[in-house]
Length: 410
Image (cartoon, rainbow, N blue to C red; front, side):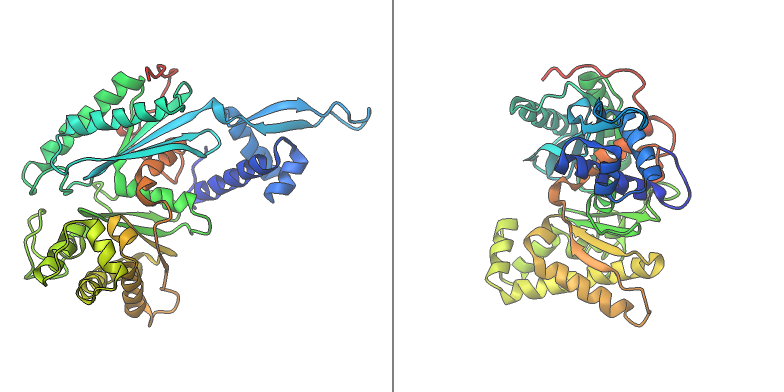
């Protein structure tokens, strides 16, 4: 894949998706038929097909021998070969492990998740992730054609690292090393590592039809983290801290956050903060299931708490919208999935904050990928790790498989 400075990697991915979708729908096609079905020019199709054939996603199954003599060389017939390559994505979130497997045709062929306790040690988290991989393999999805492994890790101030900011840096480094070692021993490849919310942003930008090249993503669960895609580029920032919107201050005199400040968005709008606020106001909620039931019965106290959390979140996102002018704002995570009124309030607040500025209003929507976003984004990054869409710096975090991977022992 070539790189450029204008976000063409995202356009190229979408062209690939159209070619693959046409082959899935129609079966084997000649090039002219494929170009028509995908709505691409012959030149664009030729570039896309050459890359897909080189990566093994598409193969030449035959030539059109029935063509009349003298009418030129026989036309190639192209078809999908989804078994030729697989990519494994793992999201080691604060309270769950998500695993997804994608084949060479970009289809998710298997996905599973397993909950983990927030205080679970990292060696146990990694072992749980490998157990989920085993469960996927035992259900019939073998990893004999594995091309790479991507892993999403929590952001630097996630509760998964430490109960407060002390020791978070050391814990993060130790976990990264443990993940690299475990994946290398199990699969024979060096994993691609990044923040799970950033990878989820990448997945939303690439895998959701109609999404533009400029997107802000926010995941709200036990903690709050995000990711930013600008001009088709996944933004990391000067020191890899882009998207840490959960630590924007919304209440200067509020409770102390694990990052060391007071009144961060995470202390107001994270799932634990919302549950605690409901309990303080007399609504006993033990977890997300109780919160969802309270939303379904339109509990006025719970609705008030969600509105306050939504206003705070919308105000933080509005600042980002005015700075970046994204076409899309995506809200994911557990709170968005169980409490639609929260997302609605976020959208209303953003609209109110930016409406005087013509053209600033983005589309605001809940995540279409749900809990699998981080794992799927890790796979997207693997498949396009040399493109502008990913733009990983050099070093072990962007290591490329240069020799055939070991077969899975699953």
